[in-house]
Image (cartoon, rainbow, N blue to C red; front, side, top):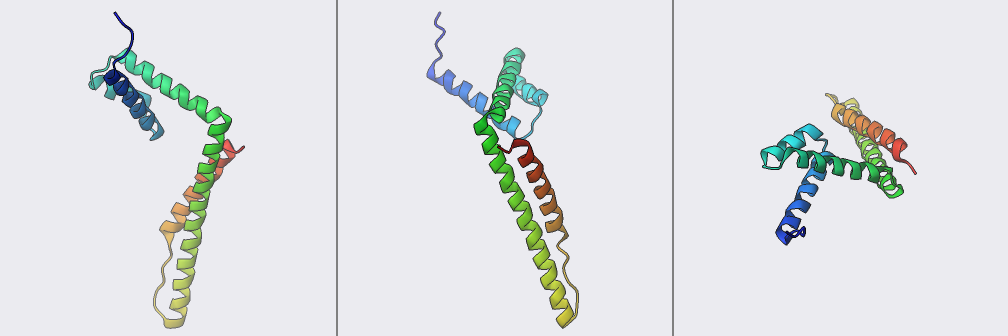
Length: 133
């Protein structure tokens, strides 16, 4: 019996690994992914092995110089997005407050932009600290 995979099997296995990688990157838990694979007809021991292999590969990539550089850049961009939201919220609040002073009426306090900007700025900063070169 040959141990070679047919092209269809190889494509299926590659798709399986890609799917598991995507789910892990999106924050899915190992147990949930394994259960989904088992419900899809994969043997439990094979499903556990696939998830473990993908987790190990992702861990190795994050620890590599290339992976650290990519993640550092990603978190720096997140800091920039958070800072942009904070500045936009400040400008909206200041502009509407000034307009209310001149013309009377109410003004907008951009709470959502301040909250979202602060969260992303902090997530980006601490992620950047963790993976900086």
